[in-house]
Image (cartoon, rainbow, N blue to C red; front, side):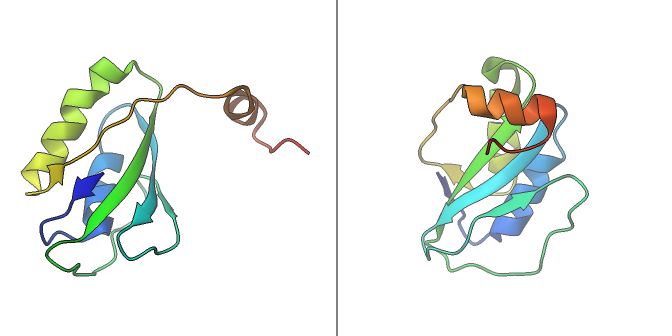
Length: 107
């Protein structure tokens, strides 16, 4: 979870997408319960201004070990004036691996 401190969530997602070894970034929830959004480095940020107390959750997908990308992600978010309030490191499921290898969903 990221406390945005007045930064637009799209700006945070775009900044995380620009990091080396980032495959994609998903905005999985917001304090306003908006729909999830997927970002890639090609997606330009939209011009939105959040409320001062807005908190969003982002999911960052990478092909490197968490210890390698974690410090860069925290630095990128901090440079925007945002605060990381919760962090979880997950491992891909068998379905995630299948989709990555084949490019299509299970039936």
